[in-house]
Amino acid sequence: MGTLVPAPADAAGGERRGQRKRPVVVYQAAQHAREWITPEMVRRLLHHYVDGYGTDAELTKIVDTTELWFIPVVNVDGYDLTFQDGFRLWRKNVRDNNGDGQITGADGTDLNRNFPYKRR
Image (cartoon, rainbow, N blue to C red):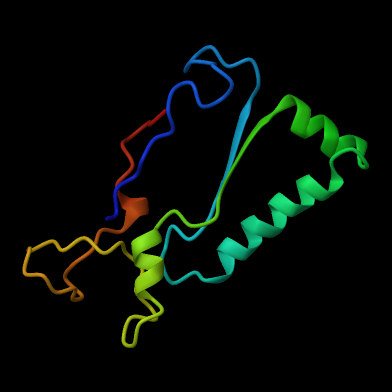
């Protein structure tokens, strides 16, 4: 729980990292578990692209020339926890930091504080 899973290197039509022919855009939401509205925003954006494809020239061009990724919930376990009593404002993932089998305020990792410096 709380682990980021990278996509396979060939997930984008056989292209390898560093050899992409198209730019990549990633739309992600719910990095902070308590931000319930953000998955809906990503879902609506996805539908905007899908519904406009073939009818809106600008959207069609973007879809045809850009690799688009839509990740509605990045922090899946933390997001799920916020629907339980007492955890509505939980922000982090659900990592049991001390291994006691209970999730308390001292547990979890704030996902946006753990990116390496100058990541690529």
